[in-house]
Amino acid sequence: MMKNKLILFDLDGTLWDSSAEVTEAWNLCIREQTDRPEQFTLADMHNFMGRTLEVIAAMMFPSLPESEQLRIIQMCIKTEQEYLLSHPAALYPNEQQILTTLSEEYALGIVSNCQDGYIQLYLSQCGFPELFCDFECAGRTGRSKGENIRLVMERQNITDCIYVGDTQGDADAAKEAGVPFIHAAYGFGKVHACAAALQSLSELPETMTRLGI
Image 1: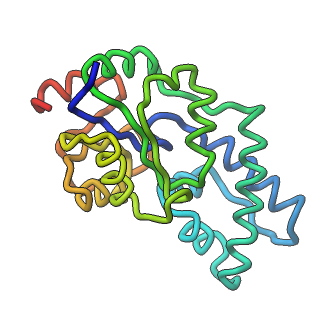
Image 2: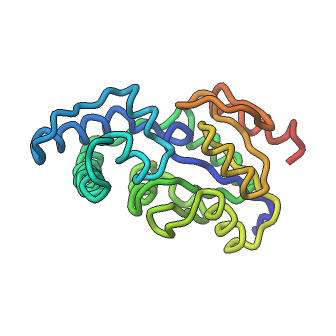
């Protein structure tokens, strides 16, 4: 059945929480593959997530030249991908059931600032990749999250869309794309304004109904 409404999700802090696994993988990479002293905490990772890799790299290694920042973070990403293959990240409670219910009425997709391959990793591990019709990321297009939201909408030929995410960057992206924003308040960030806030993913179906979307 063709659907004329689209829900796009951020990934980290919205559909899964890989922060502990990514923190361990990045610290492992830095210890074993560089001479840098930095080791990052889970709180650090929560602050990093949702940002582009270039911004994260600058936050991690502010004293290094940009080229070196990017070289190290690319090493971290490679280690992260390998680590997550054997250490799957946690989904949120009843995620498959909730998204299956939503998919009966809405097309579902993912837009993230992550590197190419990260969304694919989630899809390969979640157990329900067929529920998503499309995805896009900064690592694949080089575009802003707002631009990628519009890109997926155009590909799916859907103008009625809402974006669900957990950070102010997600709220800003929804504003840039001209779509309503629902805050996943159970995630990693706070926002200044939103159409609605979720304390758990399970609240999303009722929230969509209440908003008349």
